[in-house]
Image 1 (cartoon, helix red, strand yellow):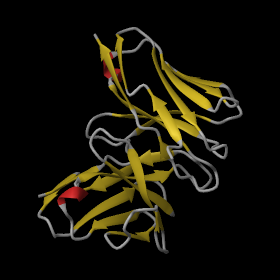
Image 2: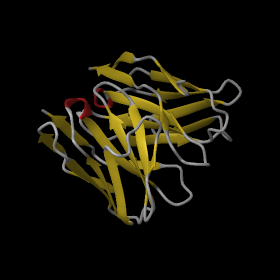
Image 3: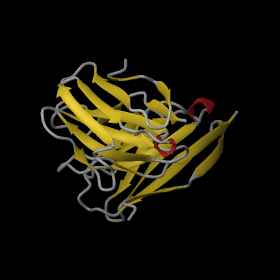
Length: 116
Length: 112
C-alpha cells in the first residue's frame, strides 16, 4: 500500500491566493522529505529538502519566500505556494526515503495545482 | 549541466518485445541508480535500482545493466506488455545527500 499520501490531489485557485499542500509519511517517521515539481511532459525537478524541526533547504533558483515549507512533525510536511500565479501551475510531488541510511525514495501520488 | 542523460525520448514496442532505455551520468560521486515508472497523473513508483558494485540486477521482467567505466546504465523490459506503457525515468544519487537527479524521461508505448 501507499507509504506517502498527499492532500489535496487537485486544487484550482485564483491568481494571488495561497495554496497549502500536505504530504504525510504513513508508516515511517521521516526526518527528511523532498518536494518536487513536474511540468507537463517534463521530468521531476527537486525544489527543496524538508527537514523536521529546522529550515528547509532549497535548490538553486527556487524562491523560498514563495514556496514555504514546514516540517513540524515526523510524519507531515507542508508546501505552501504563496501568491500563486498561472506559471506556478504544475504537478507537485513529495517523497520520503525508505529509511535513515537508505537511498530509496517513495513518492506520493502528487497534487495537481491549477492557477487561473 | 544535465547530470543524467536519458534516451530515447520515446519508444514504441510491440507486445512481447524488449524495451531498452539508456542513461548516462557524469558525476562519479553517484552511487545509487534507480528506475521509476510513472503513469499519467500519478506519482513515480520505484521499479528497480542498482549500486555500482554490481553490473546487472534482475527483478522479474525488469533488468538493469550497469557499466561503471562508461558511466552508463540501462533498463531492459522483457516480454513488454501494454500495461507497461508509461513514462520511465532513470535517476541517480549519492550517499552524501540522497538527492535524486532525474533523467528527462522516456515515454514507452507497447502496442498490443
